[in-house]
Length: 298
Image (cartoon, rainbow, N blue to C red; front, side, top):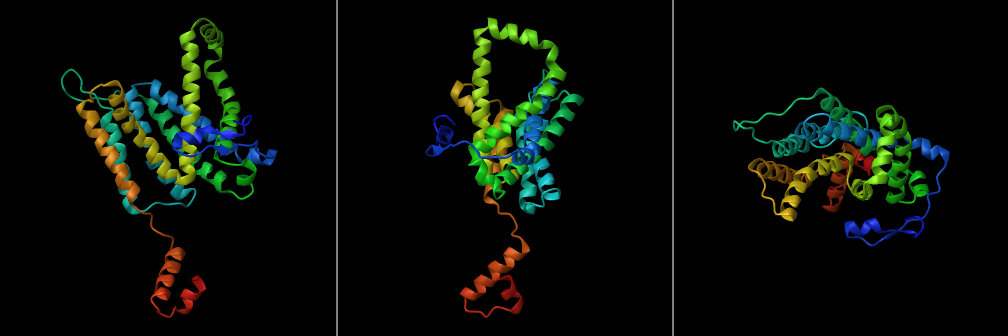
């Protein structure tokens, strides 16, 4: 994209391709993006561990709690809270996704295989995802850095490159002994090579579009969308493959998607100063003389 000078990924969001020139960043800028990049790397590394260490259903349930973690981190770390009504909707979204992952056993009941590794990895993954979203929002809003980065596409490109570098030690520590097996598989299996390349391209495009979404919304809303996608993907795959949904998938997807719709219609409580200013402007429009305190706000 830097070679052609345009970013075609925006077309997937039904927008015209945007100019995509090289970023003009400094070493200080790379340092300021380190928290974001580490959180990005941790989110995806631990997410894979959470889904593969134990039952995939259990991993999905743990990861579905991401919006709750995002709301807590944004409230207490970044002082960006959401309204009480949105807080009440979050458990419904998480519950809907959790229901959609359940499968009845031979006796007709439901059980989920508990796994401590998946629980810990999924919990830390959710915390990292919360910081990733908030740090991403900061990078896209920070004066100076925003201009030097030159857009959302460059922000994500640099994030994933720095994240790759910081992930190398973890890769060597966890799977360095299997490097020769990986090279042999890459050289012998065309299907494996295709899967690696295709999944890498899909991963990049998905996360760049997610970053674009974040730039237009907020960290908690982006986490809500990321969780809801699990239910939406169920429905989409069923339509594309002609595979009927199980009862649990129908109920869970319906609950999650409806709850996300409700969440999107709710508004955050305005900050006190902004609310006072808005009230003063309304009174002025009605011809009511503003009070001295209202004049200070205006």
